[in-house]
Image 1 (cartoon, rainbow over the protein chains, first blue to last red):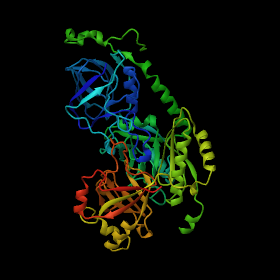
Image 2 (spheres, one colour):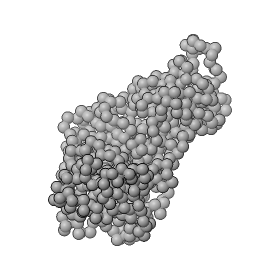
Image 3 (cartoon, chains in turn yellow, brown):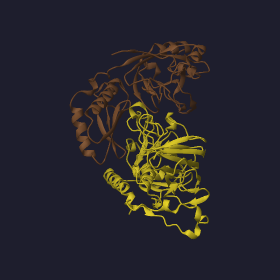
Image 4 (cartoon, helix red, strand yellow):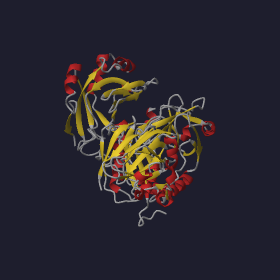
Length: 338
Length: 248
């Protein structure tokens, strides 16, 4: 059944995101889409639906939402405090949000981007073939109080599932492959890059994140200006002062700064989710190894549904037990969840 | 430099990230390399090989993003090589259905405060700079960085001036900026190292329109000087006074 989700209150950077709009690079529009694509796959697994459906992305802070009909929801990405009509609910899980109930989502406890998925997906109008807001490119706007979002028809019934998330909210070491201009950097600079521990800078957003704390900036050999070439998410661009800057989903499409390497797409969620100040390291790997890792990750994401497990609710912790519609959290017998 | 650029330019196939390849037609901007990139991208789009997800161009190169489940680097490299060998891409014609756009612009004044600085760098008076920039018929060499944003060239040699090392914090939408024998017409407000010499009222990207992008690679553009008052009047026009006519 289709319905609506009303935004009662929203943090400053809450947007609708899907897997983005490929096909417009030639016209200067980067693919965009969810900053943490793995979160889209996790939400899809929890709700047993396609990963191409749109969700609500919440940068740092969530909001309050209300559905006009009973609505299946799932919460993924950066863990945030969440409650339904005042009762706390765990992150990385699916629920039935009863019609009229208030879903409140607070600050991220770690990481940067939390996601609210709904059964049937968010069905705002498509622009250039996708629903994703691309704020840097002037497509769409952040969600605001009072906005009413259409939700798509939902044929699924299962709720009350959990999924252990890949931990990508505390930084760590990410893998990179050589990029178009890696060879412009002397080997000593590349080694120093691999040995450095960076901190994610405070200015980061959906376009990219600066890497600070390496001391001296990184310098390519010879001329600093290279001919402007295509940019892909994950590219680590080294700006004029030598600060590396990792580009994310909403990056520009071309650039003339040299790039020291490119983060693997499967490791990019670690960059997107790193909160300001979190420690990050980089390790070069061979292209062949990267291809194998990407293929394996694509397979793993397809199989996430089988890793979902039923949430066990302890009635003793449910103060308002009688008001619960207990059956809604149960698993419909015909759904294959294990 | 002249000797180097008259030698046959080098074609190179390289990887981009984990799932992309780039066919470069030169290491610096030249008119044949730009034409080759545009023609090669058009040919790739026509071929539409299974597993190719997206093709695009920047100034002198064509980019292919592919699905690792259906294609591998060796296979794609072989196919790109075969397509490259099919013809002399540097001699390719410009894209079809090109148009000439005349776009009103204010040069200088507080709307485009870096005209004096740009003129000086080019060794011209301000009047000479305005005459030179408005006489030039420049071509959309590529669209990139931001939605619908053209890189226009090539300007007379006097305009081979460097980008500023100190970035301008915020250049407004519709700004016309100059450096390295090119003009950029900005489609979004952004920091930049290009010098802000003109200001237009044109909106290059209309996300909800049937034709979202005003310009296409290969189109030609000429900027017509207007006064700040005239530009103010043009701001009510969704095209900012831009007028297009068919070239081919």
